[in-house]
Length: 607
Image (cartoon, rainbow, N blue to C red):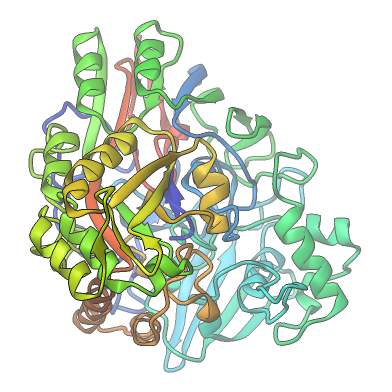
């Protein structure tokens, strides 16, 4: 999933063992266990190979009413349905975590726990074949009183596996089949509250399906609203294996009907409901009157998108807002720490910055030597030293896409890459027939080694481009800053770029990352740079079926190694999770599955 833009969808069970998370040298907000801060350095040791193992429960805490809270984010609400490749972003995930039902809850230590506010139980009935049963609580309902259950789960299953196409030949539902395509049988109980799924091939990440942790296709939607708007009598009667007029109607509403905010369609089955939203500007959440569990602490949460981190800090210092979630920035942290009674939360996160080459553009598709030359001349260590290390003194250039440095199994596949190796970059180009022009830029057959780098208008990204320009200019490679505030929202998913500088929101649910790198023809809906390698496709598909933890890590590393050789994307660095707040509010933290709002229902205020 792209987000802040960290993921784009394009986003293992959170059961992948996570090595002890290194807390950064900034003061972290205090917090109670399971509510957003304690245990953040705790190692996650749940082994995804332990199919059917007992899962820990989660229940939202009982807290006092703290009134209205204002929050500044780098992006605000855009689309209600975050499951499509065109819409998927971290900004939407901030909000869906508070209104979308989910069988599992992602806690502060990245572990998956059965959400007992929604589920009576999730039970593995058999391992050969793998059969899993999801049983929803009878009182789990949408904000219009309709039950949460089978229809909602079936809709996401249909969207993921349907062969229906648009008139242009693309996938009609614009959703990833990852994980869901391994289901061979889907059964509903008569009351619609119990779903039993049989898997044709094992799925280690079964806990992530239909859950907030499944970053690229796990947000449950009110299927009965789709039925009402399209005239489809029963969504569960639509075929999974063929295209029909009703399937087309369902796909049309799925991709278009849940876009910009519409109170009539954008229901809640969580502690908060969207009261209003102006696309990527301002959104207001209020307590859901139909919520059956413990109510959230804030009566109302008003969020505003502020792209300038310094402006965010000023809002906090002026007490215009109580919580901010800017891009990780040491200057911001120091300002807040020095400005009064405020707290800073920072730790190694699961989000990573990278530079993608558009493999549909002849410049990069036909010239692998140029991709490798860029990777040579960029100085990744310099970027880390100047932009990240002051926040995280342990930061290093990133060496993988699929496994984070704070996770078990991490290997560096890019050692020696991105070291400002100008002579090596020039040799790569000249050996391939490029000649240095009078303008100081290499050219071949009338094509110059010049390209535009698209990115969202974030200070750090503009600075990253400047550093890359400076280190690659001596290598005869020209980079043009093409920053645009709407880049992540519009240009990136449309593939409208030469190269793209953005961040993916990673996850220990590794199945959610595979659509970022799987060929589009194989379900890579978040593969915005049109990368394709059949061997990588096969390895990623294989990894999603492997229940043996060690074997699975080895498979992911094989795929990462192949991608390093293809150099379709250059990893830069891992971003810290980062949030600041008025110290009287707690527990304030940050988690990829909901940003700083992920546990806002548990916020309290001291006098």
